[in-house]
Length: 201
Image (cartoon, rainbow, N blue to C red):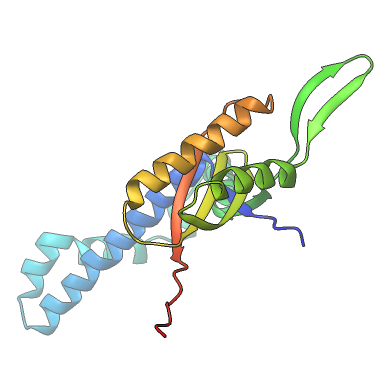
């Protein structure tokens, strides 16, 4: 069974969207605090001097059709509205996660006669065999992705875990070099202890 992994691509514009969301969240928190002050019977004039909510309300409520006069002014406002819609809509679109498969074939050589590629499972199996050659490792499970080679280990005994993981990493790296594969980051993770109880007779 294929063990595909998904990852999410992130865009620089997604950080801009997060900044806009943060600003809106802070504004909601700020004016929520103003509502709490009003509920606690703080003077409305004091709250207005801090937040300016009454000034903003009076200015907005005073806007009508006569406040925007002239075709040029209306055209500029309409153009700004369309531009804001497009910009913020695009930023919101970039916020959506865009998953992609991390496992892919590893190209070795390419010439006019053809290409030589290695399947991901072959690299994973190579790493598993190399890691399991350590006597303290009971099982190993490899996962190759564009970010490197990840190997999950289960050990037979809990002692000297750091040495076991370093040695397994060295064995996997040497196996890659021995089989002519490119050097890549090898990440070792301890995922289990597979010790068995001994029965005394």
